[in-house]
Length: 406
Ligand code: SAH
Image 1 (cartoon, rainbow, N blue to C red):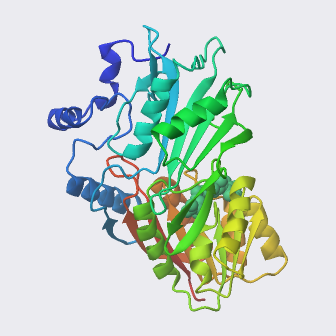
Image 2 (cartoon, rainbow, N blue to C red):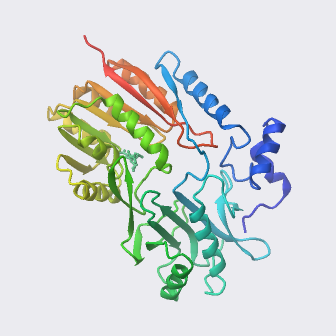
Image 3 (tube, rainbow, N blue to C red):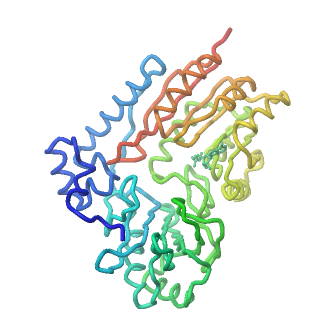
């Protein structure tokens, strides 16, 4: 029972916010300031873009000039992945939504302004079905109950939808009837996966999975390539802006068809495979084995023969490449929020790369890494923000570095 208990909690996320912004945000969304998600909801979209651009400029001042912040036409319902945690409120009603920021309290969410509407609808249907199927929600305190989370991923380009039911144990009574009934409500669902997470962890997904219906993955199209996405692989949450981001990354890379390109932190291979048509060869590296499997499959799916993918730590892998004297022309890197490592960056420099294209979802670690790259002889030439996370304070950008000629 971790739902919001009192009114005091509800104002936590709006503390220090201008009253006009707070009331505008609250008008737009009933859980504004409670869920902690859309920190900028009360602000006009133009203001949001201007603010993010300034933030980026400030953080990268004296390190990298910023060309702008590319926004969306319609900054709502852009998220193709919706995650809902299931619980009960004090009256015993089933609720689903998100954890309140840095807590284990569940904020009930019916509809969300940035999430895909169809996915929210499916989660609502599942919530409504649990009682008649006698499926209990999991209680983190007692360890009783079955359903922990539901994850819905929708491929906007193909319409394919994956539903992942995260359960505390593998035993899922009357699962076939449940899936059948769910598909009657939503025939557009193309695959259903059961993921088992029996651990007391903040991770949503566990290691074991069963495909209950369909192929167990979905396919989406980005920049003219088709990609298989499985439940545990990373995939950008805003596909419309991902195309904008990747196009900028390709423009910055300026490939001519001959280059050896490294796609580091490659996920399911999206950047490398989009680059492959204009490169001599592509080498992708990624830590998550499911994502690497998707990447290898995706190369075949797109008949791309000049790309190889490896499951390894990016730093360790590139260090080995550099030690073997392998030469690289362009490094494209897209690390997680924590940024890259000195090991990786040293190795990138050692491969002799003329250009490094750095995609970042955290300008603070980006600034740190650009400073380090400067010491290694790389100048940040230009950068541009791409608003991937509209209504939220998260900032994404891409930066071009080039090797300073001695
Ligand atoms: N470029 C991809 C994925 C970017 S997200 C895309 O645009 O979709 C960052 C990726 O880095 C994730 O897939 C994560 O699994 C991977 N990752 C995290 N730490 C890593 C490491 N040390 N070495 C290699 N990959 C790593």
